[in-house]
Amino acid sequence: MNNERIYQVLRGPVFSEKAQVLGDTAGVQVFKVDLNATKLEIKKAVEQLFGVQVVKVNTTITKGKTKRFGKTLGRRSDVKKAYVTLKAGQDVEMADLGDTTADATSNAAE
Image 1 (spheres, rainbow, N blue to C red):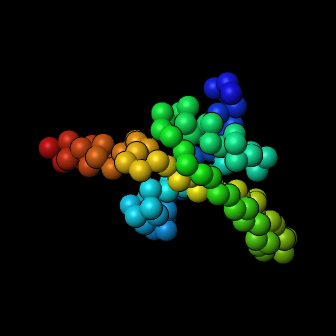
Image 2 (cartoon, helix red, strand yellow; image 1 turned 45 degrees about the vertical axis):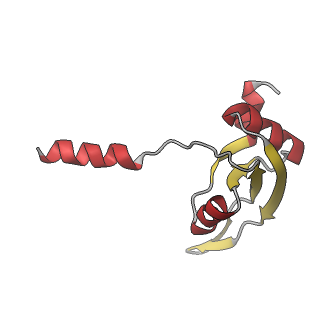
């Protein structure tokens, strides 16, 4: 799988309470993925991008809601999420932006 397809398959991580609890207790990482991505593509993309071993991949497709914007009706996009179970003892390293914002505010206060 080439690098272009890896970045098409994996759209980004999901940051929610449920995803955090799953990551801490069961070693499961949650990603937003392309609607056309297969479980095998997701597995290969995570293994190549993060250098970890994937045990299994579960996927869900959440249908977009119909919302009203004044008089017009609109519809949110469908979202596919992948619950990726990693081999015991492995973890995916995400960029931690919380530290950089704290440093920026402390520098601005000085």
